[in-house]
Image (cartoon, rainbow, N blue to C red; front, side, top):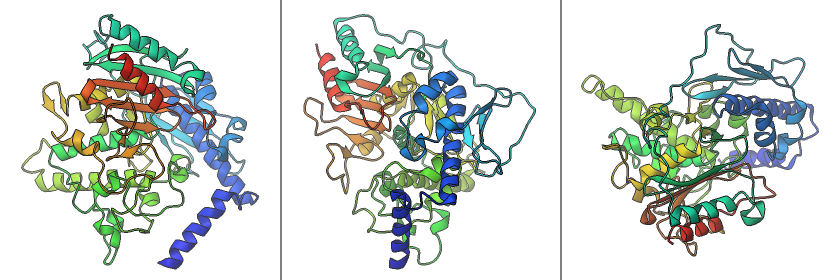
Length: 466
């Protein structure tokens, strides 16, 4: 085991430090990653997000990973509107990287070497419920003008001034007592423009797990049931969904944090990429933020859900699969796309596209403590569960961690019950139950200019209490 861990770390270190950067294989692989990234983001931006190609290139394909930043602009793209596919070549002797759209799960990045498919059938589009009353639709969503809404508008408008909080803001929305007090969008965006959530998707994953718990289909404290860990003697078999949701699995991987390049850019399958890492620490003893933990939590929840459905299906035919699309439709989140790999596994660590209003609806579900339109979608104690620290906590960070949500309970001027989904490039969903308040901020931030969500939240809280 020790030799295996050393080998993993050595190889990971060589790639991360660029020691292989001059080899032909490394250059080719990075070009393949860049092509996959470009195909994926153009595909998702066009047909999930409703954006123009020019806006995608200006916002989504700038400020990106150093590994591919210089390569992406050099690669041409071919957009097939009829088939809703995007192809980006990376080598003369290889098929282009391909991303394919469908109306249920959005865009799928096909694996390197995939040579394409043509259906010839018209691509179906989604049905939206915009004409329904808020929150299921967009009618009567805004609150009447008041002193509070005017103060909130002033605070929200400041977020578009880089000198105020940093970053590059694309959307801000503030909900209070179930109504939109203020919302604003950058030029070229509107209430129906979707962006990638990045790691806010982790909080969405935790919500979906909670929905399965409410249906009595998943037990977060039971062994995770990852198929690849069931061989005799595998210590990972004892890992629980709770430990995975709290980033305390003890698993090692090539990089900590937000990097999962083979899945996000290479078209690798979630199950083949996430399940092969060994334990480095005893589960539940060390916090280590990693995409793998969320991806594994979802795989485990899906496995438990399917197992229980198979056992009870003959007696309870109304049971459904672990289905993000179906869940988000219940909330009126009709422009939310939970994307999958080419094997059908959801990439719920990052790869969800949604609008500011849809994120507001998700926040409202938590303000309602799991109730929606008279139906209980989350357990009564789920909000408390996801927003309560348990076990190891992040070191050298100003925010704590619950279960797929960050905690802002140590921030001056912010209520202690505040919890939030945080995502790369400035995606934020902040939920404050004690004030009946939801704050959504979307952006296209870069590593050189990050948005100060703590200061912004503090100013919104102050404006919400005139």
